[in-house]
Amino acid sequence: MKQWIDLPPVWLLAALLLAWVQATYFPMGLSLGGAATDFLGGILAGGGIVLMLLAVYEMRRQRTTVIPHREADRLVTSGIFSRTRNPIYLGDALVLAGMILRWDAVLSLPLIPIFVWIIERRFIIPEENRLRRKFRADFARYERKTRRWV
Image (cartoon, rainbow, N blue to C red; front, side, top):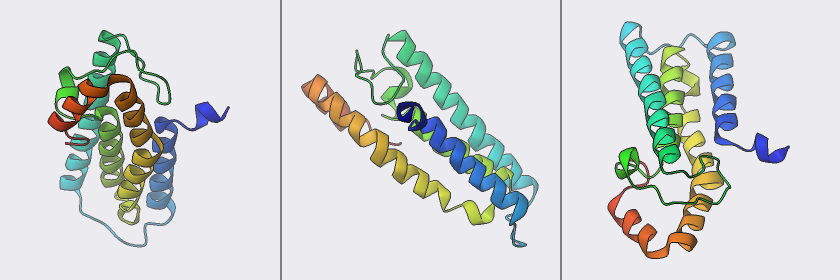
């Protein structure tokens, strides 16, 4: 059961739920604005979803797992992975930021760096360590060429 609870989408849903609860029940009279933040929030959330879809497509095309904590069959460096080593996690962070803006959840803005920190510690570092051990020189070249986030 723990393996299905400790997944990035669960962490994202938890952060989204916290932001929604804060915006709905504890707005504290704070607001970032109207149409401009709604638009920016929509762009960020939509862009995050597009990043995730591009990454899943590329991983499926390369026939490797998209599930964290599993051993990768291939090192994917093509497509969106040539721009960022973690497009799905970057997409998660963008969706969170976008929804916080859309919901005008000002007090939830600190959730974004907290979420990124959790994802980096629980998923990215262990994944990169597995890739480093399995693909050695190939991963070292990829790591030098492509940044972790953007």
